[in-house]
Image 1 (tube, chains in turn red, brown):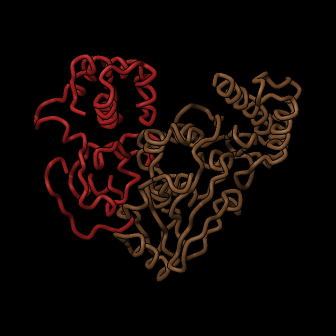
Image 2 (cartoon, each protein chain N blue to C red; image 1 turned 180 degrees about the vertical axis):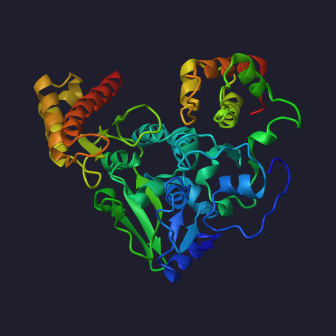
Image 3 (spheres, one colour; image 1 turned 135 degrees about the vertical axis):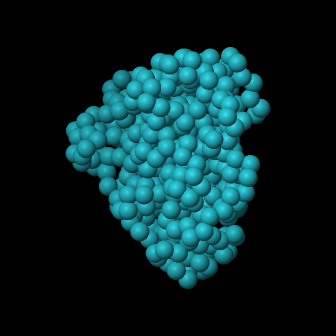
Amino acid sequence: MNGEVREADQVWPGESLLWFLRERLGLPGAKNACEQGECGSCSIYLEGNLVCACLVLAGQAQDSDIITVEGLAEPGALHPIQAAFLETGAVQCGFCTPGLIVATHDLLRRNSEPSDAQIKEALAGNLCRCTGYAKIIAAVHLAAGRLVLAP
Amino acid sequence: MEFLQPATWREALEMKTAQPQALPIAGGTDVLVDLNFDRHRPEVILDLNRVTELSEWQPANGRLRVGAGVSYSRVISELSDRLPGLALASRSVGSPQIRNRGTVGGNLGSASPAGDAHPALLATRASIEVSSVRGSREIPVDEFFLGPKRNALKPDELIAAFWLRPAPGPQQFAKVGTRNAMVIAVCSFGLALDVEQQTVGTGIGSAGPIPLRAGEAERFLAEALADGNHWRSGQPLPQSARERFGELVAQAARPIDDVRGTAAFRRRALAVLARRTFAWAWQEYTAG
């Protein structure tokens, strides 16, 4: 879990990884909204794959490598993608932001210069009800210009 | 609730025999929704993620055997050249997050009439390999769906893989929804042309109690292409024949009115999708 081994007891077998992260490990970055994979606000990496934490059973993630939004930047610092979201005004209420940061990270490590169409396809699973997306797309371009992510 | 996590396929089959009520889970994109909303609380969950054989695919005897646990993302990235129809359908599934977890095997297990993989599997004459401790059998995909969310699995059986021929011609898929991503199909259509045998395959999604083939439309189009010598000449099919193909596809559907659309709209849209996918496929064929 973000580079550390974490354990918890008495996990209910029907419990989602999202619940486990937030309520048992105290990692509230992944947000709990739709609980059906529609909104993307709980996006995390599971074994290097972008997934909705609400659609994974906690037990399925045992012994897996997980990175949440908390694990992207050094403690106390902003990841360049987070900085780009702030600078372009892509954060309003902020609820969708952590999921969008992880989804953008996943896009930019595979495609360092995405087009608008590629950004829209990559972020299609992340809903934002404030910004109208224009500033999010601007933020992804800004971050792409500054970043070189290891594949 | 009990959580079972077999490490091997053999162990998974033994667990399913011992507890046939166990609910298999692969990517979890359907199962977790029911759990999160407390719609369904299974006594036993059988997690198939540790069974590595399920996430493998390989050519075998002129066909491809694709493990039930191969994700949509991997179908797109690894099999687009060999299984273009299924890859196109996979691209229309949910979002990147859903495609990274969701599997074709899970789609078959859920057996929703709206499952995106089903029209592509029907059009390409896939068969489904199911197994139990008693052995394995192959079920043609058009005998696999029995009703809404019901399939031909016996209580002790699990879906092992699906089998398809590498595409012997152009394949297309189209889906109607309110946006490109994250939609359950209002209706969908898969088309496959078999250039070697000069046959046509179809699959209709989300317009009937089960995913359907349009058999009469398949025969009509194959005959029209053969009679007019179109396979050889590459000349376009007359408009009247293209329209007839669309009509026959629409007639094969058994849609209902529901929250996503009316039966009448679905029929109309299917006729359009049938004509359109054929136009794309024929363009691909004549472009060589």
